Length: 573
Image 1 (cartoon, rainbow, N blue to C red):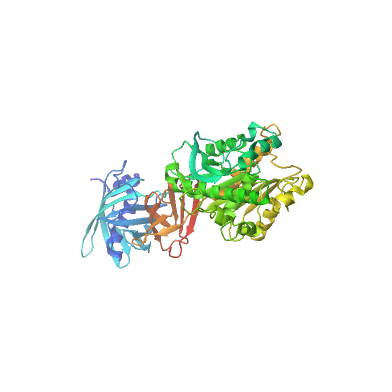
Image 2: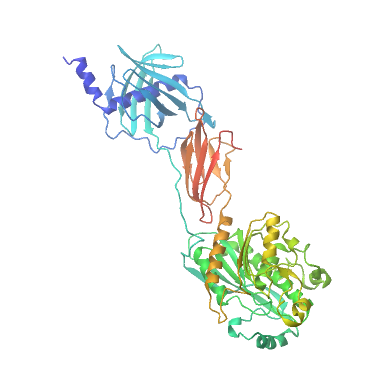
């Protein structure tokens, strides 16, 4: 006859015995103690509850020793098709203690039910609430799964089918990306995209064709005799990637509202760089030219802003075709192009400079937002790169909390660094006679600081106008310094505000507002992640946990990494 002591020794040598007790605890307590009834049939996140890989079935462990290692963590599983979570807290030679939770419920949190599985001289007993019964079982278990049956031996014997799997808590992945900060994509250029028509003198005169300003002006002045209908064009640079939405950067060239072109080398190189970084970039031609009069110069500046608005409306109206996210639009310009960019962002039909009313420009040229084409889409600017530009009135900046990064030579005599008349270095007080007083980058910076709008000024010490290239047109170190600082300044504006919402029909389900987010991972502290699906997660919170923290990480619709944490100790609205 086999001695009972031999049987005990054999059982102790196998890890499955230990897991068996763990399982018996969970299975037996649940059916008698849990008061919450499932309101739906949603299964936990654990993939298919599998069969243990290494353990054999063990029968009726009457005198087993409960002291074993590695009992930390949670297990998720089923008891007669009802969902539970189990946690073993202590195990020694005489007992196992722990807690379990009923998790197939619509409630956002669940309370623990505590249990003890005791070893006695004549067998095993389970104590949980009012339950105090002997038990027998047939269990196979290892570190990955528990499978079998448990039977109570009380007044009303019951058998429970059990199937559990070790809970692997998910973690938030740290995602790194250099998109929008380093060139990494090929791009496609689409030249001469027509965005509108308007009456004017001309829209292009590349300064690279001629560097003698006097000769150029004499050549162009005859064209100012009478305006004509002009087609308005832009060049589009699109990154060759898989994203369906990109931020849009609109570049406006300089040239004193008289010269310049969207294809100028200084514009073209920036367009290529920003497209390689992941932006959709538009280099825009706008109406140029004026007669030698102050009124004509003022009208030319007003029309340039009209054309910039028309280009923006066209691009927003065709955002899906060009894979543009209309919530992320950036403007940048140099000199006259920067004056145009700032005017486009901050000037409206109500706060226009006095000369607009005096010269009846709205009646003569139309409003700022209706010229050039029939598109009427609303446009919101995310941020501006101002390169040696200026505004007519600092109070235009009030009420428009648009971030601005500025670059300006401190010795600029064309558009002054602080404030004054353009072309102040020209003799005969030409600037005062032909132009309005304007406020340059230093004054803009000072005013934005006073109204607490994010901005940054980079004074280019000792430099004059347009210091980013040499006299022969060669792009210098200032050019690439400006490029890097624009990328650096714009990047935080690409980060979307990630908000958490709870499902109105199911209190355990949460989602983030980034519907087009990708590579999303979730993590719960003080709760169990039962399932995930893209930007949504199902979590059950444990009432006895000290914290309820939910974390999510991934890439937003623009491909920007995000990582967010929410404290859900109190109900999420």
